[in-house]
Image 1 (cartoon, rainbow, N blue to C red):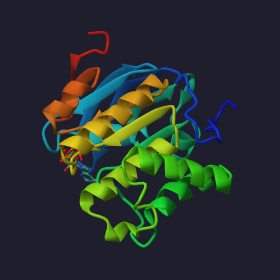
Image 2 (image 1 turned 90 degrees about the vertical axis):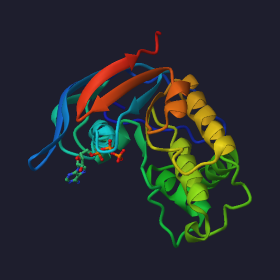
Image 3 (image 1 turned 180 degrees about the vertical axis):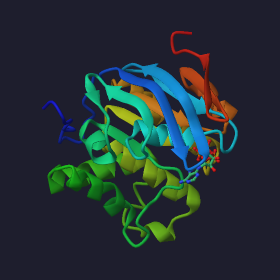
Image 4 (image 1 turned 30 degrees about the vertical axis):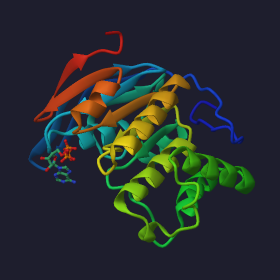
Amino acid sequence: MTDGHRPGDGAELEDVESPPLSVEGVTVRYGSTVAVVDADLEAYAGEFIAITGHSGAGKSSLLWAIGGAVACEGTVRIGDEEVRDRAQAARLGIEVIPQGSALAVLLSAEENVTLPLLARGVRAEQAQRRAKAALESVGLHESGSHLAEELSGGQQQRVAVARGLALRGRVLLADEPTSELDHDNRERVLALLRAEARRGAIVIMATHDPEAAEEADGEIRLDDGQLETIRTPAG
Ligand SMILES: Nc1ncnc2c1ncn2[C@@H]1O[C@H](COP(=O)(O)OP(=O)(O)OP(=O)(O)O)[C@@H](O)[C@H]1O
């Protein structure tokens, strides 16, 4: 497929080899607010990169631009394909764990993880198997049947992480995925994100948490929309 990425059907984690992600001259504007200014970034399969910066620095805006969810100037490419909008970015295997979880509160945890898989064409039985495995990986195997609204904020965040992981993208954009978590669950989620990179994905995580950032291979910082490289994955 030239304009598509089809995640595998099995519950087992198959490897991917993400094409390089290239962000060139990306500027995000909301009216007169310039949230991201002329950002350049290259990332490769296997890399786990943190985006840090103060509240309002532009972290979410940069992630959303990479994920095709906000209009921007400049270009975002994965391999030879230019990201144009969210639907097409999803077809290219760019997945998002949004800030604030964004679960359907009247669906169960398992349904929240399963539905996006069904929407991507994964068969029902396989989607359920993958959802269960993803929920188990975040320590929520016993909460699959609970309505999202019955879960704590931290549990909801872990469901959102499970939903992102189950999609098995080539690029995973995680927006503050550990902000509501206690120490052990934060470590668990960071280990899962690292494993996702080891699988051959590119993982980019926005975070306020310096300790979480420290666990990524590389760090870029935004300051009023201006991007600065702090550490590269190469060291
Ligand atoms: N939909 C929007 N409409 C107008 N302005 C917006 C919108 N989204 C973000 N902004 C503005 O863009 C700037 C960057 O916001 P963004 O959410 O990207 O920052 P952030 O670094 O992710 O912040 P936080 O850490 O608080 O989540 C801020 O000044 C914010 O007010």
